[in-house]
Image 1 (cartoon, one colour):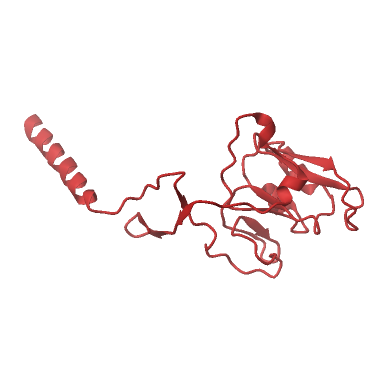
Image 2 (cartoon, rainbow, N blue to C red; image 1 turned 90 degrees about the vertical axis):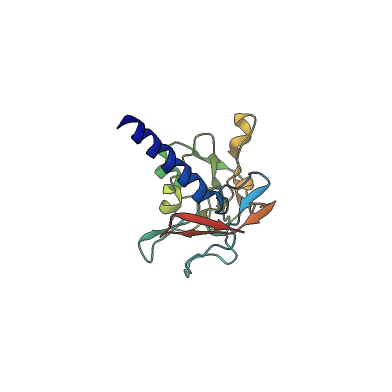
Length: 185
């Protein structure tokens, strides 16, 4: 029975390899190939700013978190009041958000304090986005945040206000939930 079991195992493994040999590749060759996250479906919400790339956000009207990609944050100065709720929400998890005093002269932010994110500590949980009652903080689909030193991972409020730059050839991915495969092209 040992030899028969061995031959059966070899045949099953060979058949599995031959079966998957003709299927398209699921692995993208990063950094030359990147996922196209810009055109992903994003539920419409009356509180979502126009032109926002799809990312994780909390919709208080529906009372749920809208699924999306959790990448770098984006800060809207015109909506931020300096309430510090994002920093308070982050204190229990990663202590990655620090409020910095930057003179912007915005009427709604009388204290002139704005969130700054340390991506060396951030765990991308999205609680800061959930806690923001004014929709001033969102998570974008910018996932390339590597750096050679820790200081480069600390984003000031001015750096957070810049929209992400997505470069390179992008691939659309369709997931087939029945077969468990992804197709890209």
